[in-house]
Image (cartoon, rainbow, N blue to C red; front, top):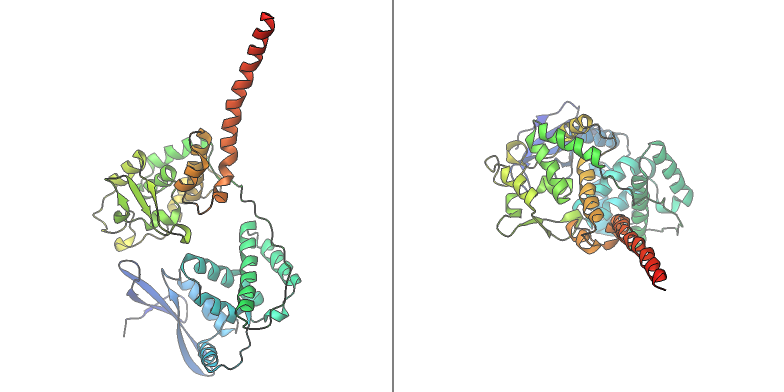
Length: 379
């Protein structure tokens, strides 16, 4: 039996197992609790695959004890009922569990986080036929009180709609037809830095003692790569000979290649491969790096950037904004560089290129009056 390690949370422990899809080990978290006078134990998630932490495991344990989440016996009964064809009481939670089986990748991780954080307490034990449009209004108001962004509120409400649609499509239970309008999200928000802010940030990065994080931020600026793509970057993904970076499964899509420009090449060649044979920016024991929030926060504060500025995300936008504002890069090329799935995602930068075209057109309008005056004089 694998060695068990205690955490600071009662009833939460972990074992170390081989990591699937990566090198090294990861933690498998378990919880213990009493049910009908008997000690029960179940695994609640993995460190990397499920983004599980001791605190999250403790919260799940509390939810099981309080009856807000299925316990191991209820899960077993549900599976047996499904196999035997017996009728089930399809609650939102059970539908979501069934829904997860048919989903994979990062999308389901995001869905699970939203469900556990924002939907479970309110809807887990409800049945679809108990819901009405007003329940969506109550959810929206509750999320607004948490001061969540419009994008997060939209995503949570959309998830609840998808769960209901899934139940209806699979004919799991009776699902009412609900006409619900989701809140609009401002997709045109651009977090790019101004010239002055970028100058301050570059100065701080040049002086930053943590060269690994500084290099990661520079790579985001020079390539437009996403935070997760930089964390996942391996040496085998870089083709120095032909000058390309292979980005595997960007945002859950197909793998794509982006050019390796001079600045990015210099940053990558300055990294040492001695720490890890896999990751360009390795974490502990050569595994995948998971969190640089503390260093990034210090850099942001030292550069006097807004508190809501997300450096990796913002530098990706800065990369795109600089290219669009140059007037030398068309929207199709920018879409490919940003590995956007559709041109609609790139349209937030279209107005910048339009401004360049407008300035060019204004030059022509300055010339035309001169031509008109010359023509008038000749007459």
